[in-house]
Amino acid sequence: MEEAALNSTFPDSWEPNMIANLVFLTRGDEVLLIHKKTGLGEGKINGPGGKQEPGETSLAAAIREVEEELLITPHHLEVMGELHFDFVDGLRLHCTVYRGEGFDGIPTETREAKPEWFRVDDVPYERMWADDRYWLPEMLAGRRFRAWFRFEGETMLSREVVFTSG
Image 1: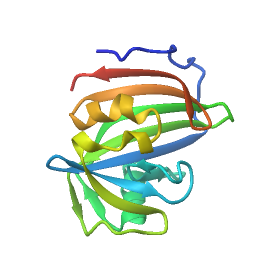
Image 2: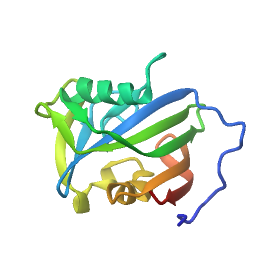
Image 3: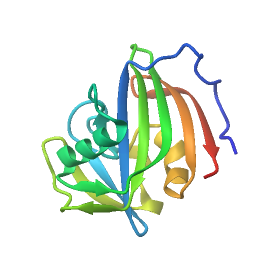
């Protein structure tokens, strides 16, 4: 099933200049999100995550970012999707999206993030990036996806989201 698209996928020649990840930890009908305090998306609500360092695997980067931002170690992370962002200012971001259920520790506020649990049916999309409402609910329901978005600043110019089974 494909989400209605405003624009076609990026050209084959598109290459990211930043590699990152997002992690969504769930417990029952809740998801752990963060109030982002620094960096890209500061002031927004999102999943924990961040840049992948040279020589680091995507999974290792995802675990490290959650540890740095929330002082917890996630378990059993599963790749659920890929986000491709093309910003008018030149940022081309590829983001791997993970979902997991278990972790060690207690989610703790840090200099980078303040954690908060939200009911899955009460996620504050109006306080998140504009793209999240097009893929996050389906991902939290267990659907895998690939998505492409163009942004000018915080304004979404185009989108394409493709959901896959299994």
